[in-house]
Length: 635
Ligand code: PRX
Image (cartoon, rainbow, N blue to C red; front, side, top):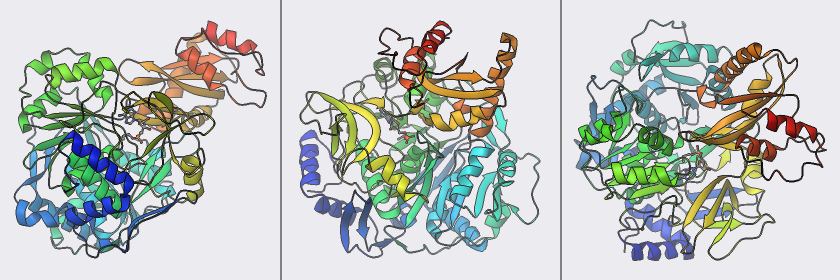
């Protein structure tokens, strides 16, 4: 029996049982049958969660781009690998075959080499969703450089923090980007960021919006002329299984962003395997994930997972609302999309627009619908199911994280019966555990607790770049010998999982992970601000929105306060990006604190959620009187 493609429920249970009883045999079979190795591994797995140290396929040699491109050339050379759909529907879409992708990645890889990029160097990629983004990622992998893609909506401060943290030698960007009706001057953001980045020696600039931009002599180069000169032949660097493939930053509840490090072989095997099964991808299907490659979803399920399976993957530059709210459905119709993967926040925004935008398009090509990034509420689930899938396309509610590299809990379409709001069953190889407050595992069904994973899986992040201790502390210290996800979950009577949300100070806004601490740090930079605290509250489109409680050094009149609100959001935009702006800002004379000086966010959260019936005992606070003031002035 091949374990690679699971086709019915009984088979899922069989494969799952095998993956738990004999994990090493199980993964060895998957890895052996479906990938191209320059040398096979000496050992499938070694692990120790106390250090923590995890190694998969140790001793193996490979290059992931040979798996994602070269090995398809013989049978799929003329098949479309990437369909690029531009922001403006009037601009032609582009179909890049596997053969063309091979040439373009090789040319780009040669440019990287000519610019002095070597195995192990870090390269920051700050690009919009244009083909050069996927090609740059693959070119790095081809030469063994470690890519660090930064979402092109992040501010210059956020960009420079990330560049410096991993000491990137090069930045790849574009003159600008299109986003709906707007154009964004990306190069200017990079110039700003690089004021503080001595590690960056060169900047390659792709042309997208053809704007007039400044190029710094000796540092900046236009990409296209270099590509034009480069050979389309580039031998892939032979890498070790556990060499880093990329760094991707994610917010933590405290401190600076964490550069999660993913290594090559395990990540490749797991993303390819999950892609095949979670989307039931068949040859000649067209698959579209609407995420940005700046996030893990784009890394794993626009680039690596699909290409490792020889799939056709759509890259969309635009937004769901431009030129109107029918854009997604127009793209589905135009490219006859079979699998469509998006975020609940997009579904809610589209649902608000009614069904007319859908009705005018032919969505009959769709077979599978996916959801990722945050819990999908029941209403959005049904809207998606009824109107987009016409009740014939299973919805795969996929739970996973930047840290997990690939999908961890999800139905398999046409295999696992779905249940609204439930991510359902763990993927083969994934052993979840629900833990109670005192660290005991909750056995059996119908329990709710903190979600941990008790056995390693191939695509787990191996460390935080430059800070292994923080990696241990964040993920492996809360529960002994287990990876702690930071999420709460419940298990129903048949063993299905439902993710209930974060149990730490990370807030998911429109599917984006935002840590409260960096936002508070940004606000506190404002000269008028003494202290601040951020909490989340429910929002009908974004899932959660941010509510800030701010103590001013000097309380002014209300007109001034309105200006201050704007300035606070401006500071957040500059430090992090517009995604972290606050929806509500309440000025207050104090924040509820414990006697040891810790802010009681639980109380603030309840007030922000307008749920003040049960605030608990506030009498032990350092300043109980402030609670009533906050309630009285709540927005
Ligand atoms: O809280 C969970 C939520 O998103 C977090 C991970 O965010 P990030 O690393 O940005 O990766 C997002 C894309 C994989 C998780 O800890 N989350 C993600 N998917 C789901 C989800 N919550 C509920 N249901 C999901 N399907």
